[in-house]
Length: 238
Image 1: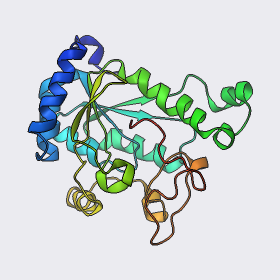
Image 2: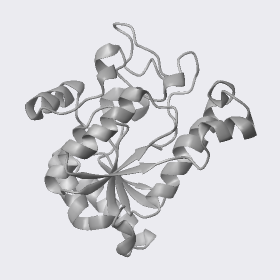
Image 3: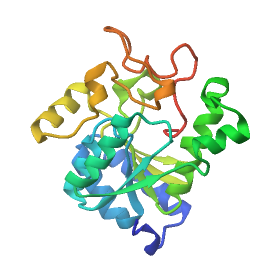
Image 4: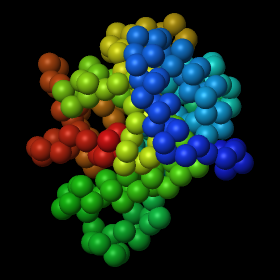
């Protein structure tokens, strides 16, 4: 259970001003400095979101804010390895894992919208099983941190470390924006961190199992997400 509900939130204008100021002042700050600023500024109304591809951001946040809320979207379509990583992270890292699920189970969605919506309308499937649940979860927070990095794809190349998310009316924080895959790997090794076993099985970017495939050597790391479609993002990072 998150403690965010117990703390009053700031108004939109104040949050936007904080985001704009911090975006400039923290542009060259370390990930730990950015997370420390977030924890100090927003307290219980700050959370981390994690896909449980790895536990780097969750671990890093816990070093400056032990017990920090880590929001995990259980879409109903995750690989068993992803669910196992989330369970293990909640035990070995000092975080408060907040598991968020869609309003409908997969079976209920199939009954109302037909089976395999992810094939027929992946945008709607992501909206129902990822975007909408995250919107509800973030209601209790003024700011959230995402593990998005600039080197992951062209669409993420200009990611600021702190920005104002107008659509949600919240501060979006990307402490790892300037990190490379080498930085991530080094942090994992240095701290002996948990990672999703699928990373060692040809899945450099892990989403829901129906929409994720292995990536061949030399391919873009995100080539396995929605392969064969023009879709490149699920919508939770916009």
